[in-house]
Image (cartoon, rainbow, N blue to C red; front, side, top):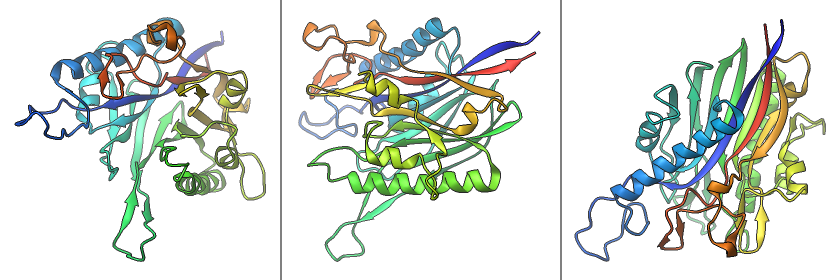
Length: 318
């Protein structure tokens, strides 16, 4: 008898998951985190809330994601602690590299060790020259994490990214374009040389209809090699985060065409933004928006300023 096994692939921008700051000597001393009063109690509350998010996903979907990409992580220690907590229960491995980001935040990935085997991992680091005619000066950003896994006899390439932010009249758009072009070239090489499946998850700091994201989906012959299932969600006004009055769907999971091919063991089923009421703001003024940890310097004690996103894929099993 053939039945379907449901698997999830998730991404979550967790809004500054930092280790607690050491006690300051003077009240106005700068903190390592850059957050106000980021102490052990607030850190533990943050970890508990992130774990609760995935408990809610497990209850809603009857399974946990086999991959979870994260952004806004400071160091590996918080994730090492998170995976010991329910519902992960030390069944998940952690992949993390320290990047040269000026704020000290990185991307990372946790994975279900009972379902997938980690084959390799590496950070992809990007440097951008500052236009002051001094080659010693350069700007840095978050690394892109590239992992290769084995699942059901297939090799899966998983990229986790957090592209440079939209700020100062979108000055970082060329950086996002450069990074996405580089990832696109890597996907083209994977497609032509190994024909392995690809998953790109992250905070793109661009919506699915932005040109940088749309250009990622095609090879040099304008043939589609990737599919963004979050495009339709965005058209239907489903958002993962907000900026003032604007709803945004920066958090996306893009899949290679294998997931839409009937001969591949994993078949795409649906894409979702997990905007559960418990993760939403209690303030009527911000109803339907994520219940964030901080609003500026004011501590709210929420989960994150983003909702998590995930895709559902099905595997045929005997």
